[in-house]
Amino acid sequence: MADVTQSTTIPQSSFPQTSDLTGRSALVTGASRGIGEAIATELARRGASVVITSRKAEPLSEAAERIREAVPSAAVTAFAANTGDADDRAGAVAAAVEQGGGIHILVNNTGIAPLAGPLMDADLDAYRKTFDTNVVAALGFVQEAYRAGMKDTGGAVVNISSVAGLRSTGVIAAYGTSKAALIRLTAELAWELGPNIRVNAIAPAIVRTKFASGLIAGENEARAAAAYPMKRIGEPEDVARAVAFLASDEAAWITGETLAVDGGTLATGGA
Image (cartoon, rainbow, N blue to C red; front, side, top):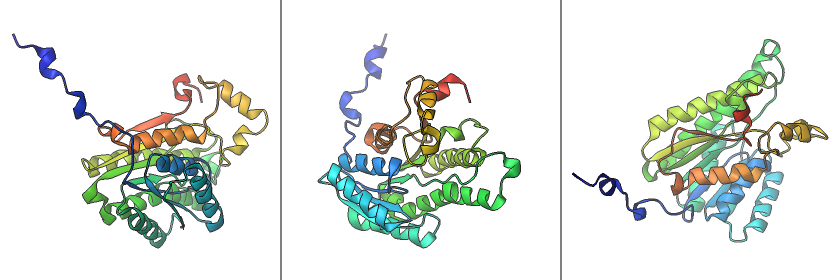
């Protein structure tokens, strides 16, 4: 009888061995602060050249300087761009290609939440704007990266969604439905773009950023943290490390997935 164990053993050397991103070019949107800046810093720390975007040039340049201070060897370029503008998207991708010799990693981090409260009271123009920024622009960036060479060189796309896209909150329904659409878009793109391009998403819960400042002001942070199995809210670096993993060879057989980086909040089954 054949030795089944021996016949199915895969040599360790056949597995990707590194999360090193040296030689790869990354574009991170919405990176002038918070999660986006932390992602860009982590990618630079692992050796990638990085282009960061946001609408306002001054805070973006300041973020680039902070990245260089954290990673003195970083090759980082600040490119002011409106995510919703097709020419700006093309320019940001071109900057990544020029700096890094191609585009190998795309992180769609830009997101807005202009609406809160019941959907029955929602302004539909603001609702459309939410989807245009959180979903349509993300697809636009993927299209630009694909056309700029990712279809040939391969690469990884990571979309920043939210736990609000995985379950209802009753508070930020417009934002949540847009992030659910981004999760669906992630799966569809993974199916369409494999095997050369992997597409995954991250779904954070509350993370210590200006975006979430209203949710963690004063005693709110302690209340929020108490509801999480990990007993703390997230830090931007928690998300950044997960993104770097999904962008690296260590995730070479992972695509179409949404990774919750949420301190265990989804495990509780609560709202």
